[in-house]
Amino acid sequence: DCKKNSRKDPFHLNALIVAAKYDENNIAKLIHNFKYNFISDLSAPLGEVLVKSILKSEIPLPDFIVPIPLHPRRLRWRGFNQSELLSNFISQKLIPGFEIPVINNLLIRKRYTSPQMKIKGYSDRKINVQNSFAPNQEFLGTTKGKKILLIDDVATTASTLSECAKVLKASGASKVFAAVIARQEIKRKS
Image (cartoon, rainbow, N blue to C red; front, top):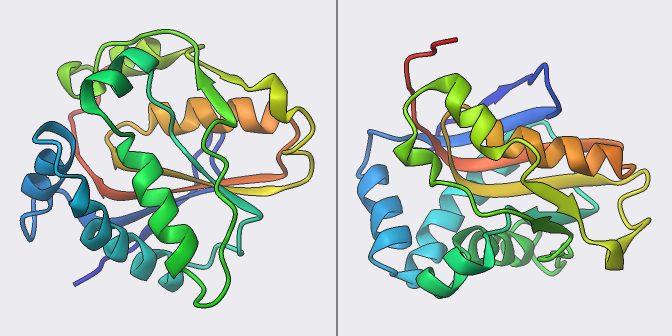
């Protein structure tokens, strides 16, 4: 069963759609296998969970979809960007017969960061991704006045999504929404 959680982010996101609870229906195990056991075929069932949730939400149709970028070193290690696979699935399935453009390299991850899942504190997670993203100069002007849907697999503090939304809005995006498969809860410490 798909659960939707749309909330305002006081920082940079206009809404965050959370498709499922992290600790229900084997979602955590599926995400772990997808990312760390390198089972890229899981993008289809996990993407379907996201599509159902996005369709139930009240966000407008995006002008394009942007996956959260991986640092080149992490991309070489994993062999694929899980957010990119999910974005491509959503692009093709959200509106049958119409493909929403995906811009895979609109954002650049400009520095290598520790995996967020290894960082426990809320403030430490925010600091870890601060100033980690930049707009790709090749796409200068592409975001002006556009509604963008960011895609990632898991959000905990939503620091990564918020940091990407900040860059996109600074580049002219009018609205930035995000959708994730699940939200993992941590205790918030300042």
